Image 1: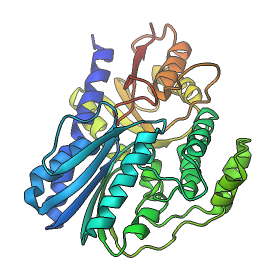
Image 2: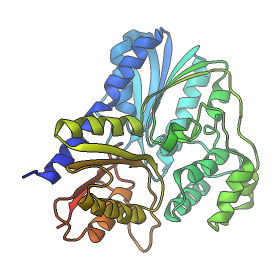
Image 3: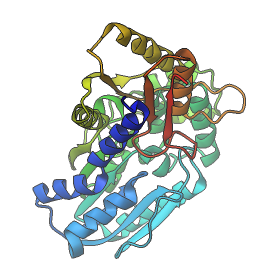
Length: 363
């Protein structure tokens, strides 16, 4: 008899191993032919690991740099680099201080080349408000949007117009320095203007769209915030080269490989699931019921889904999307035999919780 729950965990763990940042960074740098002197800037939950891999690969070609990552995600010193920790997913003042320090370093050194390493969480970990907008304004707007069930694209559309480093503004700020950007994508469709809110990519969002999000979710920010939202972000940049080195699509493809090794018939249902977590859980339970009739694939089946669900927080819950999805699945799949669901955040944390996700079954 198959140990389905054990198999689900194995597939998840092996899929994550296949998209670890170290090997992805080193392969990309090997192909790039990038040489020094280089200033390194790494932001996101994988920033420390990406920076260490870059330092191991390029050595003294990297003269100096800054790493900004989530509390607890630094694993020590990296020679020649300064490491900062800050809040995620809820922005805190340490992010603004670290970002301001990084900008001042770049301004004083005026590097010819900047190696910019971006991973999930970059939006909360790289931030400096535009003139007229306070840190408290940013926190209030971000928190209200997250708790209202706004999609990550909607949240980032607003963030970009309130920030001096998002929406392409960082690249414009440091020009004429040339930016070589390596990206671990955590955004549906790998939209470079959405990943970490696109600090070094031309912005496709508009002020009109940002204001529409504010209106949609009933936010009432200060007049200065509304004025800042009316200023357009750069739609053209000439000093950036970009490569996506990891994404949810690659993780899903890896899951297929490892599921097949275990003897499962597999199918990727989607890599762009985008809805309420509880609705996704109930829907996936309905799909599991179809497997009684060998639909959509013959049993034994391993169905792979990627995406980014949202949680509309009610009451005092934290809003871990993977855990909410798993709970909704387990309620709808109650007493269903020989079925298990593993739901995990590929960047290692499930929203503002201390868990990576959840595994459930019909029991």
